Structure formats: C-alpha cells, structure tokens
Length: 627
Image (cartoon, rainbow, N blue to C red):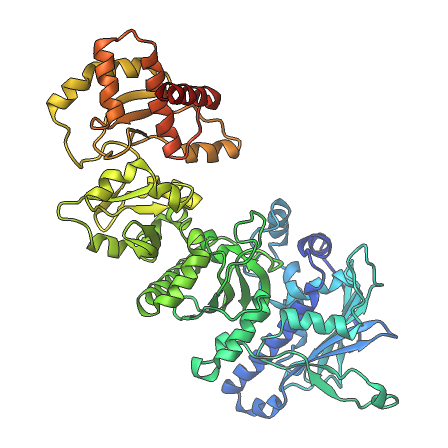
C-alpha cells in the first residue's frame, strides 16, 4: 500500500454515467440516505456472517449499529457503521464498479431506457454510494476491514478524479461523510443537516432494517451546554412480517395496518405469507373493513408496499397486486428482486409475476375460508368490495373459477340474503342446464320485469345483477361448475314449447308487425310471459341496452342494435289485436296498437322510448275512447 495519497482519474464513460446517476436516474433525492443506510446494514450483516468462518472476529461484533452524525456548522452528514469494512482493494473494486470493463455498454443501455438492466450492480456498494453526489459537493469515505490494522481514506468531488490514501488509526467499519450542497427548494434539495428531516427519511425508508440506526438525542432546555446528550435509536426494527405469528398481537397488526393505510378502522382480516426456495419473500397483507372513497376512481393509488431485505423501495407497487384486488393493503419483503439501477422501478421478470400469482391465490383462498367459516365477516367484505372483485372475472381468466367460487349475488330465492353460485347450483331443478340471470339498474326494476314472469311462475331461481360490471362479465364468462349462464332477456328460453297451431294462428299478425315496426328486428310469440302483453329481448349475442349506453358514455360510437319484440299470446290486448287484424287489416289504429305494445315493452324493462310524446298521445287517445 502506498504511503501517500494517490490521485486516480475516472474513465470518460464512468464520468458520463456518474452525471446521469446524479441528475437523471433518481427522481427523489432523499433516496441517497436510504442507499447509505442500506449499505451500512449490509456491512453489519456481512460481519455477522464472517464470524461463523473466522471466530476471532466475534470480539468485533459488540454493539453493532449504524450511526448518523450531523454537523450544521460544517454542513456535513456522516453515515457510520462498525461492520465488515473494506481494504484498499475492496474500495477500488467496489466503488470502482462503474469504472470496470463493460461501462460503455451499460451506459448505452441506460441512455436508451432508465429501466435498462443494472441488476448485477444492485446491492453492490458502488451504485447506491454514488447517489450521494446528488446532495453533496464532495464525499469522503474512511474504512477499515475487520481483523486488519490499516484503514483507507477515499475522497472525490464526483467529477474527473478521486484520491485514495492509507489511514493508520481508522476505526473498524466504514464512515461516509457528505459535504452537502446548499439547500435549494427549486431543486428539491432539503437541509440534510436538519435532524427532523433525517429522522423522517430514516423512518420512511429504513424503519424495519435489522440493525439500530442511531442519532444524537435532540437537545432540550435541560441539555443546554451538555455535549453528552447521548444517542437514541430512530428506527423501530419491528418488521412484523419477519416475526413469528405467536410473537405479534392483533393490536400490533391493527396499528401497523392503520399506519400504512391511513385508515382509522381495524382491518377485516390479516393475511401472512412466507415463501422459501428458489426465491424468498414474506408478505403481510390486510383486507380493509370498509371501502375507501376512491376505490372506483381512475387515478386512485393502489398496490402494496415493497421492501427488499427490509429496505423500503416503493409505496404503491401495482406490479404485485392485480387491479381487482386494489383494496388490499400491506407489505411484501423480498430477499432479491430485479429493480432498475435506481431501485425505484421493478423490472417485469418471472420472479415478480410468480409472487403476484401467489399473492392473488392466497387472497382468494383466504376469502373462500372466510365465506365458509365466518359468514358475517364475509358478508361485510362482499358488501364493500364485491363490485371490485367481480372485475377479476374479466381481468384474470386464470383465476376466474376461484373468483366465481367466492362471489355472491342477489337472487329471486331470497329478498335480502345473497346467494353463492355453489348454493344456486345445489337448488337447480332437475334437468335445468343454465344458471339464469337478469341485469338491470336496480333490484326493484328487475323484479318487476316481465322477463321474470314465467320463471317465477315455474319456480326457477334467477340471479339479480345490478352492478355495472355485471353487464360485462356475464357475457364473457361461459359458466360455472358445468352450468352455462343464460340471460332471461336474451335469446330463446326453453320453458314451454309454443304449440304449432298457436304459431299458425299468429303467423300473419307477426309477419305484419315485423314489417310495420322499424325499430325491431323481429316479432314473435313468447314463452316467458304470463301476465304482461309484451317484452323486448335481444339475440343471444347482442349487447344489452345498458352496455350500449356504457360504451357511448365512454365515447365509443356503437351501431344501433335492433331487438326482438315478444308477445304474450294469452293476453287480451294481443288476442284482440290478432282478431282486429284478421277482420280489418287496413285499419290505421292497428299500427298505433302495435306501437303501444312496443313502447310498453320498452318501459317495462326501464328502457327509453324512441318518441315519448307520440307514445303519450297514443295512450291519452286510447284512454279517452275508453271513457
């Protein structure tokens, strides 16, 4: 080791990369402290592991900690640890990571995309260390490897050169001192000699790391003139997800949930996960007891908090939780994940997708257990979040069957209590092949719909679907447990076959009405009506009127879909029309009666009349003639 300071020059590519890192990669300058504390924590971990190989180092493991020292007069911030430390070669190799061969290729990728690679660099000392230059004009590092006698001093202003020299009396571990730039609100540079600001950053990013992060106690009136105020630990070190379930009380779980969710109520359910093997992670998830106000707002934040080795990475990690489970709160802590070079964005890799799939399945399994073992709690959950969960029937085909299993729907079976599909199937009549449903704006509208008349008369249960998402998934999902879904307002239903002689009786009238009513595709006899004179239905593949309105509200122009008018052959109005048509086929009032039947069918399903004023005039005229 040389006896004097040695000045070395960065390679040109390394200088360019350093400037990119300082000015472009990190969107939040506070992250520099997270990186330095994370490096210090890694150094403590490495010393603890090294003692298993070298027993002589065990004497060096007393009071392992990270200390942050602030000097407002000198405008410096120092992060110090008493961990493994580094030799001169370690400093050159680790801090010089970005100056190794391959820098030019890495720089090219980084310029093309901020997300580009860098996975091999994450967790190495060099990359996180250089984030210090976002907030510092000069960085000084003093380090000594545990078990050695001589230390090393490294210093650089982050431009063309750095110096390195031996230090005889360096303490074990590593101390990184930042000579801070002036605070600048426009550049989002805070005063990082401010104890409250530093404590805030530590609590946000490093609260759960294993080792204590210590700072000088904040002075009070009684401490004036006393330099020995002492140190205090500013991080909790209480990673609840890393402790066994027996060691954590429900109260602690609830307080942690309130802390991360900003919700004042206790969670409905706590879900723990721990995966070992090819890749390891722990998860602590919560199902809220009430839906947030922004659950269905497009710009609402969603996702769980992501940690890597207890170091906070991001708040709303959407990549780890599907949109239909956006209400789930909690933490995922992975041992190793592919982040971009700034650790701010996840790379979409196999590992992340695998964690997401397991989290989904765990949540759905928890809901299935809740449904069978705690019906009251499940009812609370479904009332608050069922509408969001049903979005998964469209978004997540892989788990569609599981989502159907834990879904509940109103039905004609009970006026207040919803039913599961499993219970519906158990009540199906012999020979029934379909799960019948009807969509609409409200339960009252659906229950008064003429489409239900024959189903109610014959005792068939019909699901009552009133959520907007029901219009979407009901057509997209083929069935459940071998039974297909069938809308009672679309296609033909096999309740009673209309005799051929009845078909023949009405053939001429149906043909005439089909030609007369331009707004309909066809007029036919109905087997689904018992008391109403008419109803309007769609073909099996047609969009429902409600779905048409939804698409148009989203700015999508939809072609007008003509629907089918069905007549009740046993209703007095329909039989009277048939007789009148047979006797006086040219009578103009027959057209008006046909329009009235069509209008009544539209109103009965809650639809819009094509010409409300004409319909009212026809009704008033018929009423006047009846007096």
